[in-house]
Length: 420
Image (cartoon, rainbow, N blue to C red; front, top):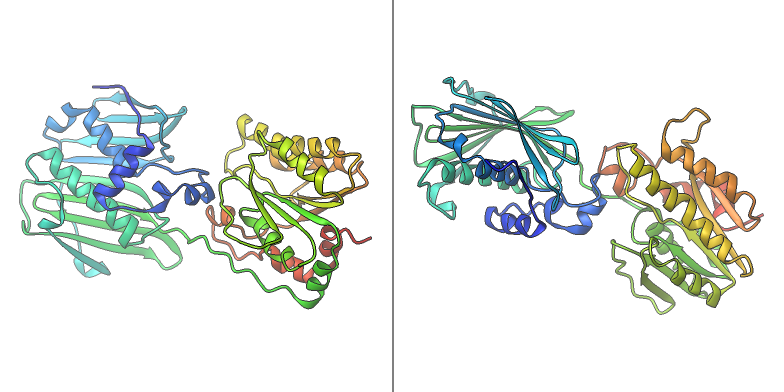
């Protein structure tokens, strides 16, 4: 048995084509960037199939049940270690994190499926598949690929995740002509769905998580807000205008038809065409000098700094270093390099700042506030928690968006338009 394997993005694309599971969470770079993971993640079924290929002896054993629990997402192009815990248990590990727990059992199990309790029933004909069931691995491979397509494309569809899979093999065969999938949502208020796939002597129980689609509705600017936008006389530079607050500000500030607007993005391409708009792909990690040239050439200029690193649930040292660069070092370098130029910079801070906060994000935002308050040309505002594509990818909450606060908060308007 090989004790590790890798899954490349190219393998993921081939699997998506073969299985017909085109869930954008796995294959679309922009969608992956805006997800809670910050990048595309592997199909869960693809990880299982690679494990089984690496452990061919396991398939030769007369097992009756194979249970897989997903613990963490699996990323492309990173080594996945296989660790055997005992004769019935394996762990898959990536970046020192448990990603899968795998158990197998040789004891016979009985199906206990009450069809009357299930709300969905989908039947698939055998000829829906690309290859024949000529051995145990091919059967499992084909059924798991169907499972992946069903979860990612049919029910619950895009943005869902597979949480658990349990493959059971019985001696007695069911209807051999049809593959049946049953689904039941546990509760209207709980996003867990129980599913059952049955074919011949195989039954696969799998649990999926229904997640929200990443949609933001932006309100129209009111008359007072539009007046302030049209009163701007300086040129405008929006750093990080590809999504979120930055994109919202771009669409708003383009209502001023008298000034030049420069908008930078890195991953989220900006699809707007206006004569007075210049769109530039800039990585603030590498291209700060390009930003400084724009500022020097087009002063006086208003700068809106919305460049962000990926939001994460983690609070580790790597994430701390990312926060320091994006929320402190980069804007500080821009300010220091342009002391002699006629600029004003808007810096969005956060209401999460407290003296006893353990969050790296809050601590670094507070440190940035303390440094940038020394610059007379910097306007700082603590923005409350709002809905963006990034935080909606983690949890669906009934929060207001940035445009709502701009329309209704005069203090924010004064800060963002540099009104004394």
